[in-house]
Length: 301
Image 1 (cartoon, helix red, strand yellow):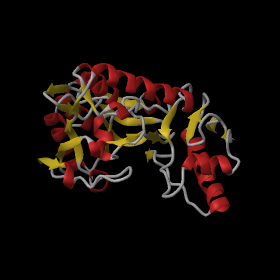
Image 2 (image 1 turned 90 degrees about the horizontal axis):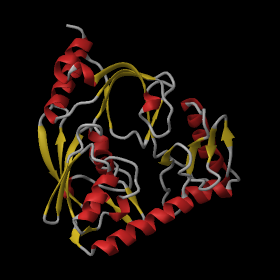
Image 3 (image 1 turned 90 degrees about the vertical axis):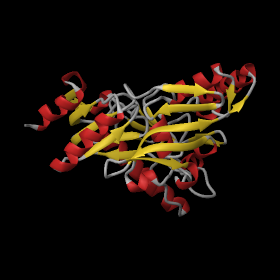
Image 4 (image 1 turned 135 degrees about the vertical axis):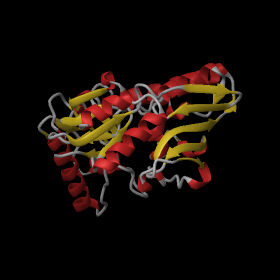
């Protein structure tokens, strides 16, 4: 049986696409075709797909909303497994939220608001999913995932499921044990505090106002492009290097916030990568600080 038929047997033909342009599924709106693009709706399907692919020696990549992802112009030779479309259930009991890895952070924040639960407002404007947020310990405005997550359910490389408490996740600045060992986050538990709905709403609105004022939301991007170097701010270093508005083709250092690289319309992944490398080199030459991309690069460039 061919790989396409095996994937269709596990997932259903409607959930398997061939030569799917990744520009349709990333917030940068760039990226060539993935050999296969699949959308599972339950853990068992991911286990079965992973087992088939590992047995066949076919690479695969788990993605959420595509918000921190740069896929090469030549695409991805393997199987892209997207979980945000169908594995996104959110359940609330008392002050605990249990959500699947594909749940958008904005949706979790909205549910928390409705339930009068405080502490997740920082994540309300991050355009990613819970799985990616746990893996990268996403954060903003003084909050980060390690402050609210209590445990995660993950799939090991072996295919076995395991519950991992927060103390064993190795959550640090934009990192976790999962980003190093290849475990796949399937769901997570979040513990919040009981709060006043109007105060929570006001906090979310204030953070939204800050984002609109300071971030280039009018252009496709992958969010903050570079990790924050210890003791510095990436955007300030880029600005002080004279790179505000610097362009390579349609890839540009945002004129609004130098920590963002944006797609002005027809940028390619190669142009974005070239820009990132030139910015990193210029900042290193000027200040002796090497900027590292926060955006994950996947596929053939």
